[in-house]
Image 1 (cartoon, rainbow, N blue to C red):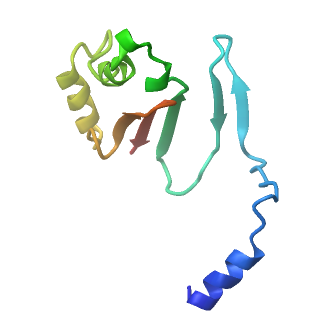
Image 2 (cartoon, one colour):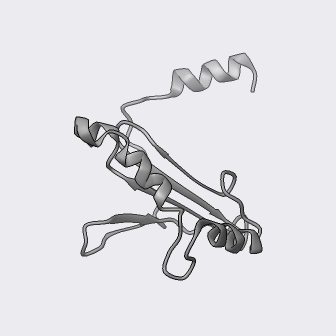
Length: 120
């Protein structure tokens, strides 16, 4: 877009205008309090993307707990009952064309811990 076009868009933008929510968005809350939003997307076909945001970050830690939120972020990828260690988790992901970092990742900041999953 040209500079003039960019300027016109900025001039027409009203930051107070309420965003319109997609009518296909499904929101809910599980019994354990987890809230979710699901938005179907046909393109690209046969793919899934998931984001889990845990509203707990480093500011929620007491002084003697510093680093726990970040530790939990890493421990999540260490394994499950069926995939008992991180190497098995990595192998399972590689078998469907996924890798840590590019397709599965997490980060912790002051206010939250985010997990992302980009599936094939």
